[in-house]
Amino acid sequence: MIPIQKRFFKPGKESRMLSILDGIHARARISQQELGNKAALSGAMVNKYVKTLHQGGLITLTPVNGKSFSYGLTQEGESQRRAMLGQFCAEIVQVYSALKESIREKLTGLLDQGLTQVALFGAAETCEVVLAALEDTPFRVVAIIDNDPSKHGQAFHGHRVVSPSLLPTIPCQAVIISSFGRQDEIYGQLTAPAAARNLQIVRL
Image 1 (cartoon, rainbow, N blue to C red):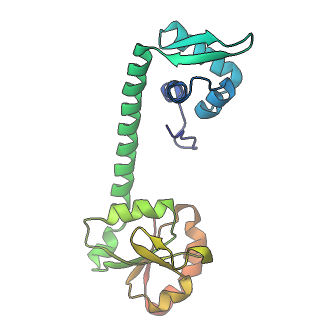
Image 2: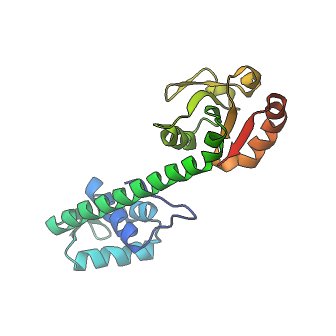
């Protein structure tokens, strides 16, 4: 399981239990420090969770030497892990779907103006979400722009990444800033070239 440790997506008791169960499922000789890293817990809190899971019949503890244990999941523990992982995945899908819907809502203004030829600025993970949000919509992505020279000419989900210097030649009607973390910086960079072509700039 990929741990999510973000300011607005903080792990709680159930997600930490899942992290520990999933860590033990992956490797019986995992250390408590590694379990702590996966679950975002201190060593003392890992001990507390391990004790609770053991008392609850979800994990087994087998002494390896005087200082460490080998962990294992009981049948009930594995069943619990699968159930919790299923719920975790369902919640992630819900968040992903809500994010795509939010992106589409922010772009309704472009549709109202008949502006459907768009370029995306920022070829990173968040751009993947924007591309997914634009599927099955009237929008057509004609280019993906990025400031990183190492990305220029590279394929990104079926699109070729180009330099911002090519913006004057791109047949788009609007530029969508798909780098969520650098919206203001990129907006400032685009202001002049977009004004020269009367292009809309959309910050998500």
